[in-house]
Image 1 (tube, rainbow, N blue to C red):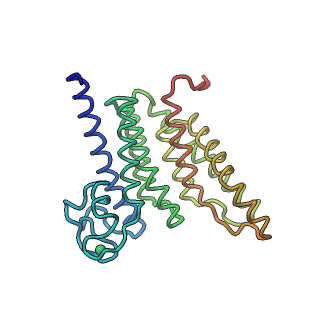
Image 2 (cartoon, helix red, strand yellow):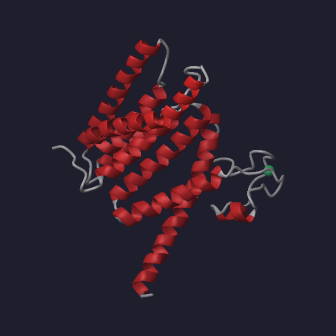
Length: 262
Ligand SMILES: [Zn+2]
């Protein structure tokens, strides 16, 4: 191994560790934001027995493995979701770093991931997308565009506006067609935020990809329901698909071969 490879490996390892530590903080956000609890105080505790978690038991992924997924104090099992969120966030950090280097664009993409992952998990759990995430995300997205080489601030604002308008339109159509609320305002705000990170063209691509992903995912459920003679009993949240579409579009935005018009 050459010294340069050693340095690169060390930096990569550090990015992975910092990324998964941020993922550990995301777990706190996912648990506490829907409960309207502070995300900074108190420090991590076991949701079952409320015992504070020692710093040495709070190492991303490794602590979960060492404790075999159980709380040290009460032995309650800890959801596998915790290390998964930590691992995904660590990998996202490394991915952004290896692909885009230590750049504003890499930071923007990673920040978008940091907003979309909790939005997805909270929407799956509670069927809400907290304003804390989407409002903060909108401010971060527009603010970053002032210093981003890849997206002008006018583009960012146009993206937020386009994303929001299209989803409001879809929401209105859904209300007319199904005579009930088919999409929450949380989804609209999420798309406003995504638009601020990707601009108006990629906002349209995001919505298209979200609809595509949502349809592919819904077909087996609808088929099963049709066979069982029931209809429309499953409410499928749209936030996770918007998040997936938004992240894919943000990646495509940085992909040179993708045929972006004009
Ligand atoms: Zn416990």
